[in-house]
Amino acid sequence: MNNKMPVTSFGWAIKQRLVELRLDQKTFCETHNIPPSRLSNLIHGTRKAQRYRKKVAAILNIDDNDYKEASPL
Image 1 (cartoon, rainbow, N blue to C red):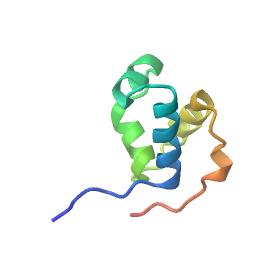
Image 2 (cartoon, one colour):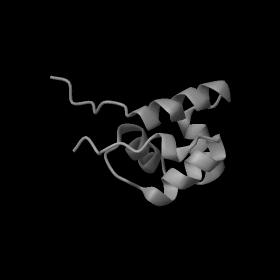
Image 3 (cartoon, rainbow, N blue to C red):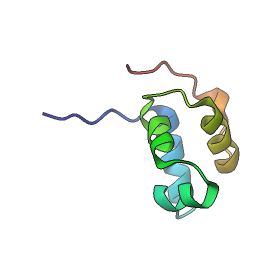
Image 4 (cartoon, helix red, strand yellow):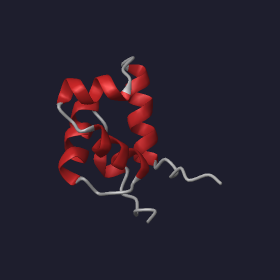
């Protein structure tokens, strides 16, 4: 049984931008003082985490308004 949550479109944008910057999630989180669990929440849409969503979008230069999706929960 697969218990993994699907990746949201905002999550794919985060992952794509991290690849472009040649950063892994752990390094990105450590560098910018973002809890890894919050980044995971953003990638999978399991929690809103608005404070970190805005911070991640600003750091990665992602337009947050392009990714207003409903939570999969």
